[in-house]
Every structure is written in structure tokens, then in C-alpha cells.
Amino acid sequence: MITESQKEKISKSKILVTGGAGFIGSNLCEILIEYGAEVVCLDNFATGYKNNLKSIIDHPNFLLIEGDIRDLSTCLKASSEVDYIFHEAALGSVPRSLKDPITSNEVNVSGFLNMLVAARDNEVKRFIYAASSSTYGDSEKLPKVEHEIGKPLSPYAITKYVNELYADIFHKSYGLDTIGLRYFNVFGRKQDPNGAYAAVIPKFVMQFMDHESPVINGDGTYSRDFTYIDNVLKMNLLALVSDDESSLNQVYNTAVGDRTNLVELTQLLKKYLSEFDPEIGKVEVKHGPNRPGDIPHSLASVDKAEKLLGYKPTHKIQDGLKEAVHWYWDNLK
Image (tube, rainbow, N blue to C red):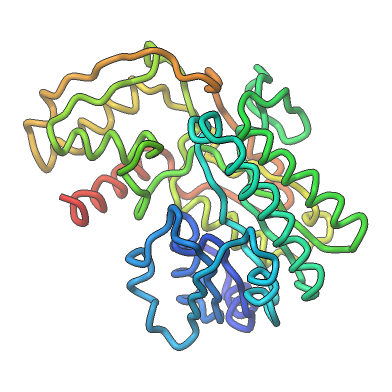
């Protein structure tokens, strides 16, 4: 995934992962421990799970802090003496933000600002944060390029755009180096299939495994740049190890550069799941109304990440879905 010299840089680092018990955060914690880093995980377990950390919870280089990014003192404590911060903590989901915009703002904006202040005060070398493709809003241009965005379509999208503005001003005002990664529909191992705001892939997988009909919002022609977790891990690690000054204080699309519509997605899921249970191939898919705040199509250009970070995606959607389906079947069936 990265070179041996880059791994050595990681092995000599102390790194804080906020939201480290969540889907992306726990995968990050694991690979950082694998590469020899000293890792601090901060999580309030609002959407993360201790079980996601079971493989590293007792590792001598791993420290778990249960706390909330909305508390500045907790942020200062967790980031004390760390070299780098991966800020993954957030309340995701467009529907959640439409239902409760206040809490989304408290976590995603106030909590984000607390972490920036903590990073500044503790003289952290680099602050790498989870941005979002929702920032593109009502822009219809495809593929999405980082310097052209539209108006946000949800409170969640506003919070993630504000993150980018704050990161930029903290670099200009205080000299804090930041990198924002605009995630595009990330999926893979450890992604929670339960709850009202579960992402589409794990939710559909669980429904298919239970022989329940998943419901597509709309006619199924809406498309997304579904991005497997290993691509996201690669982008985060490249953002940490990059020594090129021009790569810093930027935002990058974190994606594959390809899109799949929801009808195609369900067909692929049925195909791969049917290898375990042929009856799944007979499960019908239903359709419901379009979801408020959803954009019709999302497709990323990854040219900027390729040029400045040396990024190339390792998994197309078919490869990622095969691995994800195997993980869900082995762990959740």
C-alpha cells in the first residue's frame, strides 16, 4: 500500500484517531498499529463500537480514551504529545442531519473546531480530516473536481463544508497543516448494517441475507462512486506520509473514479451473496420515493490525488463488494 520508508515514518509516530471505534476509524487504528505506530483512539461510542477494536484493544501501543469531541479539555488531553491527528469523528447521514440539525452541527462543527484548537495548542504536525462528497451539493458537473462545488443540499453537507473553511483558516492564521479527504460513499468491513441511518450497502446485504426485499429510493438510476475501505485507508496514509509541500493544505476526492447506479449495485450484491445462499437470487427489490437531500449522481475525479499524493485506487466496486460480502457473511450471518 505504501513504501517501506513511509512505513518507517509511521512507525516512529504517535497518532490520534478521533472516532477511532467507528467504521473508518477502527480500520485506520488497525493498520496504524500494524505499521508500528503508537495510536490513541478517542470515541464517545455514539456510532462506534468497542467490538470494532477487539483485535488491538490490548496492544501495548494502543490507548483508548472514551470521550466527546464537544469537550475541549478532552480534545486537548487526547492530542497531547501526538504527531498527527486523523479526525474521523462526526455524525454522518443526510437524513439524520435533516431530523436533528442542531446535534449534527454541535458534533461536526463545534467538535471539529475543538479538535483544530487542540491540534494548534499541542503543536500537532498535521491534521487530516474526513471531508465529504456532500460538499458538491447541487453542482451537476461530472466528474466532481475539487475546486468546483455547488450549494449544499442538507445540514450535514453544510457542516462538512464548514470543516474545510475552518481547516483553511487555521492553516492561514496559525500555520497548522491540514489535509481534507472528501469521502465518496465508503463501504467495507466493520460498517454497521443496523440502525435508522445505516449506509445502503451493509443495509442491503443484511436484508438480502435475511431474505428481505431492500427498498431503493427512487427508480434506481441514481448513481454513486462507491469506494472500498482499502482505498480510503491508502488515501489517509498517503496524506500522512507525504513530504511534498504542495500536497498540504488541500482537499482531495477520496474515491475510485467510477460510478454504479443502485439497480446495478443490488444486482451485484445478489450475485455475490447467492454464492453463499442461492435463495438470495430470488429476493425481489422494491422501490420507494426519492430521499430528500440526495443528489442524483456522484462521480469523482481522482486526478488531483494521483498527481499530488501518488494515489491509485486498489479496489474497483466489484473487488470491494466481493471482499465486503465475504466479511459480512463470516461475521454477521
